[in-house]
Length: 219
Image 1 (cartoon, helix red, strand yellow):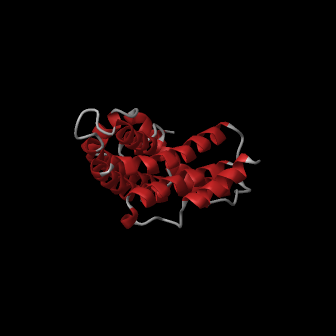
Image 2: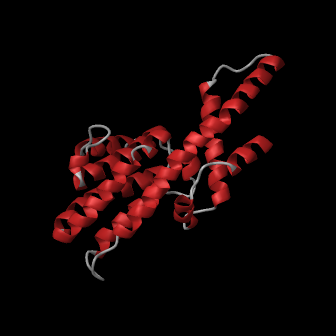
Image 3: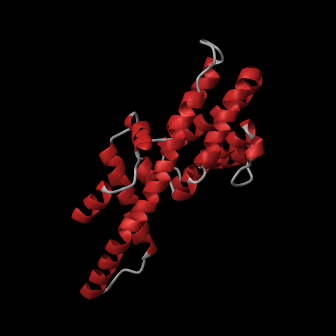
């Protein structure tokens, strides 16, 4: 516990990232969550359980030695995501009061979902790596809304329907693995619909998501 606390205090989270996080959650909790995420990753990587006390002590010492490095790597990813959030948030407001309110509200709600209070432990590393693309897509969409808010709203309503249905499934005892996958697939759909030139991590379409949602809704 003392080792984890010491590592948490020394994590590289800069002033911009801390300022961005201030409106989301506790900085101490963020640091704790980053270390917890790193620790779980190390334990999962060493799935073979030690059968003797000496083997356990050897494993524990090895994990302790690697924990600081793994937590620092995680902290740098989280830091980059928060710096991106700070740069993006000011661009997601309408240019004129009352203009396309629902569209911009949807963008800001999307940003909040990308930055939950348990970000440090809940968002996988590979997804944090996608955040720059997600944020670029949001800025591109914000600019396009000014030119054609009606077209944007049509696409937005389709995505919101998927998100609302997924939210209902999260309340039930559906497969977390599948609902998590769908959550990120819908994020990719947003990129596809609103900023197609940025590309997506995997093939995505409304038809694919509809099929997978129906499969979950039918269970």
